[in-house]
Image (cartoon, rainbow, N blue to C red; front, side, top):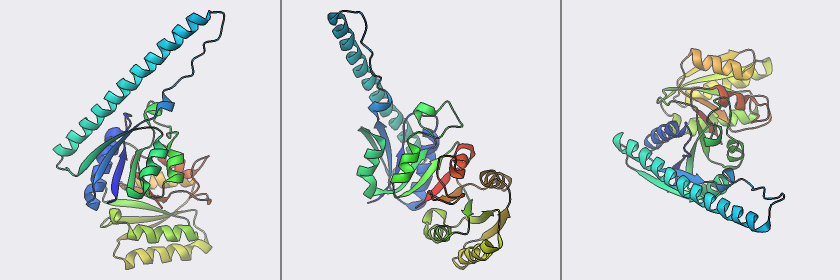
Length: 282
């Protein structure tokens, strides 16, 4: 059975990841797995033992460093278990019980790839434990996860409130038209009002935009159409905030100025600045 997988790492986003994943699991009537991966590479430091000290002293220092690393690993393990237990308790208190906890050693992406066939929706925070002090940072592992994992991905960006509406970013391309079709088929969005938004409208895109809106309506979705101008990410974020929309829906990545992912892309800027979750559709 496919699961909702929530990546928990002890960052300030862990609670919002848990809240978002519980809502997702309840909406889809799917089991939830809280996943904590102990990534040793993020904590390791290469010791510098060169210099004018004797061989015996260096060996003694190396042994102390090894013992210190083992202690840190044990503390990280206990911290992860405590975090998973705390989030499990809160989930049970909220009335959700179809939940499992999983703790793994290794690389996050490799772990997710091993689990990929059982992932229905992946829920992650916009940044991890290493970058949690910088609210304007996107986690170093998020790019590789989004580019590699083939399931829908929900990005938690802060405190979570269950949404009743969403912004669907459209750019007139063939890929964005397929995005509309996938949004129609996504049970997570069922029953929500859709604000279909296109930035910097042009005559050659207007027909595609109108067809996309009509297709949504034909499938029973309430649609608000909006053609915006200005910087893509700023226009989208301002519209979302002005209309108090609960979620932003975009394609995972691509090549147009709306769909590019990372390296100066609009998607990155939206993840960084958004106060509502992003659903990145495959």
